[in-house]
Amino acid sequence: LKILAAKAGIESISTEQGQIILRLLQGMQFNKQKLAPFLKDGIKLGLSQLHLNPRRLGKEWQGVLEEVLRRVG
Image 1: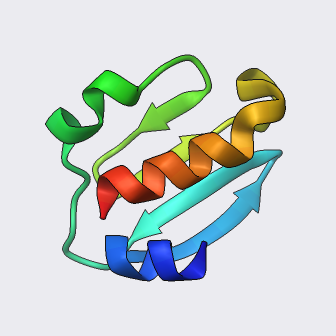
Image 2: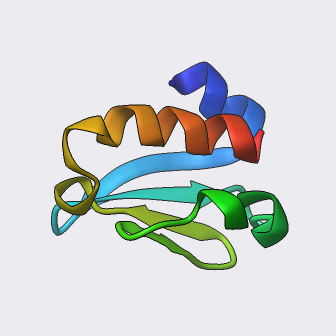
Image 3: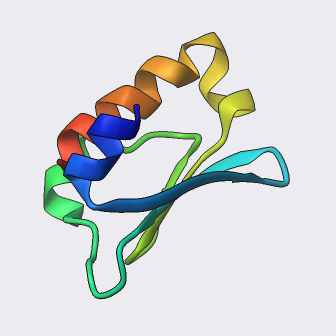
């Protein structure tokens, strides 16, 4: 995951209040068009942060996290 995150320009992956937060490097923004087909319940996209809710995504949340990192990178 660290390699995928580095390639995608992700500065940090952390957890806050049960959610996984991906933060881009300063000055970068997520490409909403690239991620739009993948967005679903449990994923919230901002300009420089992406929130994943593992409870809403269910037991496949790790695969979703990997796929998000691949699409961003």
